[in-house]
Amino acid sequence: MPPKERQPHIHCPLCSWEPRPDSRWKCTSREPGSGCGMVWNTFWTAGCCPGCGHDWAMTQCLSCGRTSPHEQWYHFPPSEDGETRETKKSLETTR
Image (cartoon, rainbow, N blue to C red; front, side, top):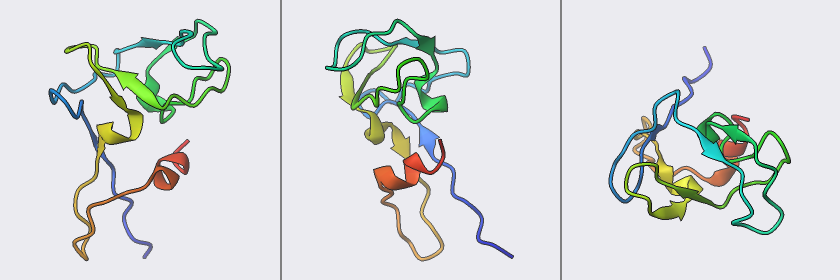
């Protein structure tokens, strides 16, 4: 039996706000190479805009308004061996 894939708990690393399925972000020109205007839930695509393909490095919290690195929003439960740290590579495989 293959090992069970660990799913992250997603919340703002600064205020702990949890996005809902209907939470939406807009692709703006805040980062170089972005700005197509697409509106979507950034956590459905691990921070990649489905409109222009831009990988967002930072994500703004819709509650506190502060920005933090996108990958810091993912909080993985410990594995059976106690490993708690996940890498961006593991997020990319979920796209």
